[in-house]
Length: 447
Image (cartoon, rainbow, N blue to C red; front, side, top):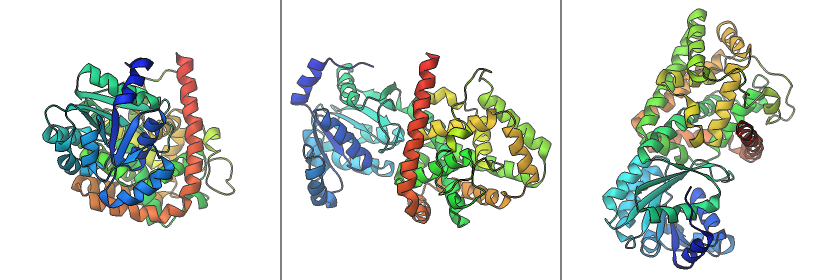
């Protein structure tokens, strides 16, 4: 991590302006943190929001200058960040990019960098440098210690050092990648995770179930599933659509996840115990086989029991086939992905999901229980069927590349769960805070 001296940074704050095109949740997060650190910040959102945004920001962030559109930001800012939806990046860069200030630096905050970088190369003047970033977390997560990818695509070391110094106020963990590496890793760590929890939400919605009100959805693992699914659906649809639809690596992984669900579910209903067991144990070896006997599990049922949305949660855990977890580990196995290889670029949700999967597969006796339930117990058969169909639905939506269809499907389910989001967000924040502290403690002990 190369950051300029405090003296140099203070000098730059007197002369440099940071511009943000797109003041949604992440754009506002950046604007607030940069402004609080003493940088001169300007920004804009859609032009029809100009007056409303200007009035609200006068009380929220009075130091941030609000401009009518991206032309004003592009002409005046020395480092411009496009914080817009992935589906709109080229249209917006084509509109405002040619107006970029001479010798300025431009970057983006989208979750898929290939279309972003392509748009910059196509529409920015040749004298403009390109340094892109991506904070691997949502807007409601504390940025401290979270992964922040920095991509020095077309820039001098001096310009890159300047951008890194600006970003240092986030106190994130800097990761240096090319845009190709970024897209492969984000697909590996996010695409299947999102597909799993989106499928859970749709399956519960289609079954007209609020899982925290249903006795069979009890236990620590279930709490984690429910909390993460609610957290995803409480966000904006484009946060997940951009990664899924614009990243070719994500297409392959989401498709494989649906295939894994279908094939494992078929083995379950046909009673093919030996074949199912062989496949699951092979996946366990490929994904978790490198973990030594002394490896400490990140999560346990006692910890996860604390984070139930149920008003009077029962103790213990419900026997379950855990099709969603079996399928995600199987899909990693089928694709040759070892998720631990990319842990430095993992989101908080991914770390929790990896911890839950690790707990299921590596706790003595628990995986055998799942296999037995999958073959012998029909309690969750209807739910597993709904989940399998939901995973195929999401895979089809992504393969069509249809943002409108993705939005419609996402928001229909979002409305069903909307009344629970405030409580779920609070519970999810507490769970994430506790688990991330465990991650830090474990990393400290290993070092």
